[in-house]
Image (cartoon, rainbow, N blue to C red; front, top):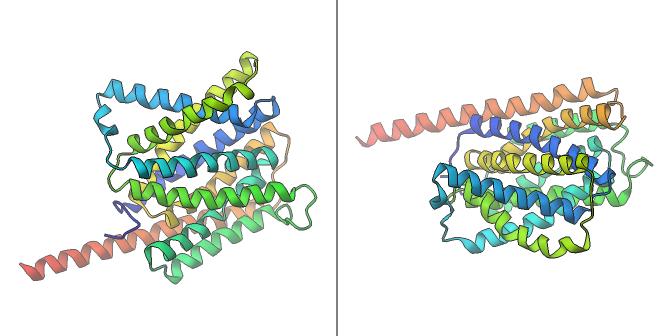
Length: 312
């Protein structure tokens, strides 16, 4: 089995990641709404983690699956929590500092980091087809966001915000690899639970310095953001159980469509004219990867069957 893949089932992984992308885009929209209404970033992250912890624990109690939380890898969970909470500050910070579509577009550098990590840490062989698909997807992002993504000459893209978004993309790739490693021995529920169990108390320490009174509408936004985050985390973690990080991260491209729509409908930012050119390239890259992974899975199954026949 590939050292960077827990249980290869590419179509299921890609489907879960598609759902995760839509849910994360909705969460990002709610983060931006909360930020515009004066909710501090540490407070957002506390409620996001605390509500997720309560939801996951409650669901496991109802399902009678608290045993899923047993682990012999508490150190690995701790490292994942450390990178995860830092990553949340950068991911949420990018959403607050940049328009939704631009923040989302820059986040699409994560697959490049994921591929590099796979090559360096796992010596994974990345063929020309996957490199070409990644390049095609990123070309679609560039076409769609032109000229807004010109960091050097676009006045509406703060350099600091762009750097925050790039660091966030790198951390997303690192966290994806950590989750994939944990998926070899841990259930998705366990991974999400221990992440929130480590980080919610940590953020509670900072909460008194940032919390303030909110209207009922703002509390509704905070609650919806946290619930979207909980669902997205389960979907994201599950996707990495069935496919490699360098592949499933490609599905995150579809969140740009959601971000563009949210930006237009809620934040009065019209979608770029290049949407109808860039979107087909992005979606096409994901379909190419799905087709290629399916072919590889069929070839592996055929080879295994032939090997078993030869031994019998």
